[in-house]
Length: 127
Image (cartoon, rainbow, N blue to C red):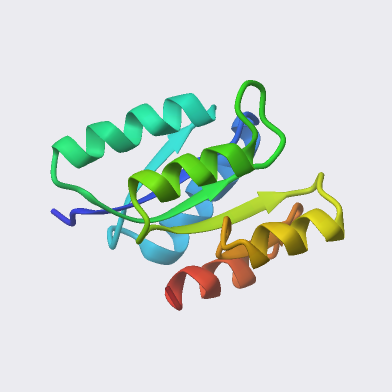
């Protein structure tokens, strides 16, 4: 069994379902796919994967989520696991904020919703 995971975090289940379908279609069994509906749930999931010695390649996160926003989550993630790539998948931030998040290396890449499956998959393949 492969022990490399991609985690997706979004409070909208339809987004997580779309990502699941795209990952399964493009990566089959190359990675473990995990999904969380909040930043807090994702942090718990990351701790659980670490105890199972599963490496995390990438975390894809929404920005606008109840509780903890995507940037706060990404900062906590980078403190915990600095090597993990972080992609922001959002439809609700300004160009200025997007630029700031990238320049501070809070997110490796930023994609807008609705996203292009081809762009997302190519980003993941190039990590």
